[in-house]
Image (cartoon, rainbow, N blue to C red):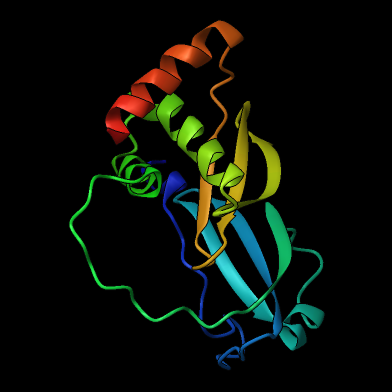
Length: 162
């Protein structure tokens, strides 16, 4: 299940109809849990209304499509919480599970990640987030940190961020 935590970007077109989304259009995101990991579908209103209700997704939500902002000029700077979370999500190292969780919470407080749903799968609680600007999906396992562990993990993350 190495791909299970892969970040999935919001589509610019409807998965079913192939039609491009328009700025401000309502669309639906569906996540399906499969053997290979999570599969994402972004559907326009028409495709949402015509879907097969017998096939239930792991999670789904409604969003408003926003055209992506123009790319920002790249600058060399120290790692941000978002950069670090992305790197740890790609690496999928179990040793970074606590840090991924704290980073996701930090980005949620900054309103960069929007909490979509909290689900249970394979005996674990998974937090589903959507990136506010890009629409990417982040699935972060909740490591069930105890209160006495939080300070240590926060200190580690602060050191990583410089």
